[in-house]
Amino acid sequence: MLSRKPRVVVRKSNKYIRMQLISADKLGDKTLVSVISSELEKYDYKGGKCNIPAAYLTGLLFGKRAKEAGFDNAIFDIGLHTPVRGSDVYATLKGVLDSGMPVPHDPAVFPADERIKGEHIAKFLQNPSITDNFEAVKERIMTEERKEKEEETATV
Image 1 (cartoon, rainbow, N blue to C red):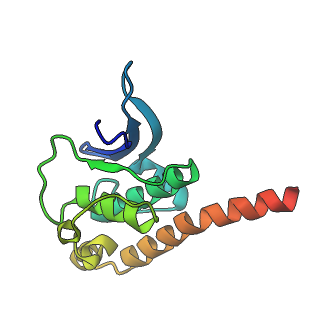
Image 2: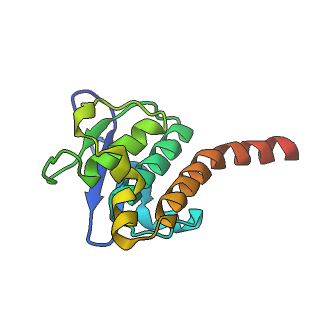
């Protein structure tokens, strides 16, 4: 790529959302960081793995890992996905941004906060614990780094 910045690549299947940080090289692309939405189970996420809340949490986890690996900016690449405002593809971008990793974007494309938290799913299923689970998983993802660093300093 002309900018020489890595790309945040988002790909969706019927079951999962995969995110990768890819850098272009003369010999071929290199994957630097990778996250798949099935990893959310490690954080006790109980929802679907291919909906808007899962997309946001996958983006949050991806952004956190990319920052820990030393990458501080990138370009968003949705490939052949149709760019639809409020879609789960843009929920992943919101998660990346909320992790603290800057990516050029237009805030008008993000889903509403109610949809990111899964309130529409909780209302449909008449199960308010869905939003509580989302918030708990979000907190676990954000505090995981702090716990790992505290454990490292305690052992040194």
